[in-house]
Amino acid sequence: MSFFKASVKEEDVKQGGGSDYLNGSGVYPVTILGAIANESKNGSITVDLFVDHNGQKQIVYGNLRITNNDGSPNEIGAKIFNQMLIIAGVSDVAEPTEGQLPIGKAGALKDVALLEEFTDVEIMLRIQLEYGRYNGSITEKKVIKGFYRAMDNATAEEIALEKTPGEGYERDTKYFDNITYKDGVTSDEVAAWVAGGRGKGSAPAGADAAKAPSFGTKRFGSKS
Image 1 (cartoon, rainbow, N blue to C red):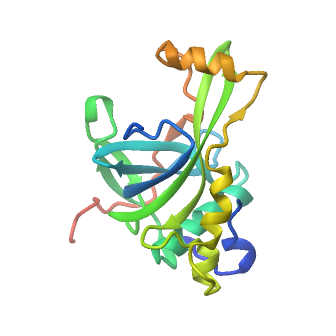
Image 2 (cartoon, rainbow, N blue to C red):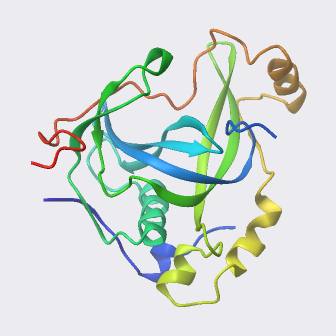
């Protein structure tokens, strides 16, 4: 059974327009070390990305939502995930298999459901910060807005439809620094919150209560 099949339809590949941590809106050259499938307590499926940026390994949680709670495709998340497939040269993603990644406390190994097609994939990752409020605390979410091919900044649309690579990237540059503020949060509040250490103990945005689904039995890296 397939987890996700890539589409080269125009509507599915069209892309909208300091620290080694992904702490700002922008485009980052990263290596995807692992893609993790998670199922929320309500039944929706998301994909988290464990990436390396200039030697700094980190995880981007919870905003590539592939399906909704009722199992129907999530239009936005599935479209962006499809773009990642096209850029990575993947046409069909198999069901996840059991594996481990060093994403636990202090880098401890944690059991996860891995999409094995996405290991050591070099890609340009576009992140946009989104700030909101939860239980009186400011939250920060790194929203994945799109991907570009590492060697020439080509979009999925340009790859699938054989258009000139890099033109979409150039059109999108005016959006790279965008930041979203929700729930009445202001830029001044965020600046003070960041200066104060990002509010230790505040609720992380996008960290949906999740469990590793029982999609496979093969241990990641096993040759059997």
